[in-house]
Image 1 (tube, rainbow, N blue to C red):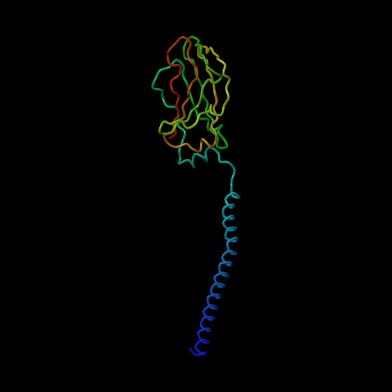
Image 2 (image 1 turned 90 degrees about the vertical axis):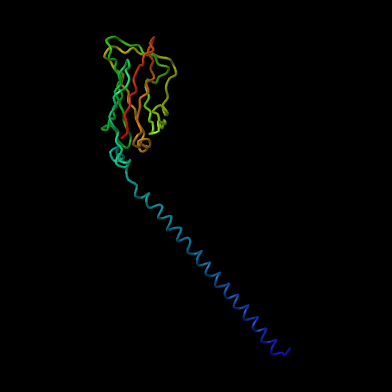
Length: 206
């Protein structure tokens, strides 16, 4: 083998190695450049995430919530299908409902001409419960309340009433959908009587 052939082969090997090194350096520099750009992209994404927080508004009123809840409305009490000793009347007080909360007022009246004695197992006289369209219990006013556990009784004179108020939190009002309903569960029992104390008091969500 001649010396010139060896020299030429060596030069070709050196040239090939140089090209490989240059290519690797170029790729490394490009990767470094891409990494350098990432913080800017992350900052842009973080800025995009933070932007909505700066645009938060005051809590909506109950009327604004209605329009944002698929146009649902809280209806009027439905007529009872059963007879009971006491009469219940439940209303949604839209005027008193503010800052997204809902206010319901319950009036339980004795329509008889004589007084009625009612027994209670605790300090709770009535509860407001929300059921969904599948008749599943979603929320109850008593969930976040504390009541005395002592037995008690109340004598309701003829024509007299028991009044209660229920406050429904904003987070519950925002979950209302058509087909759900608010229903009163009365905790009292009549003394020495098996008659129904109070028929179901229901307000539908339309």
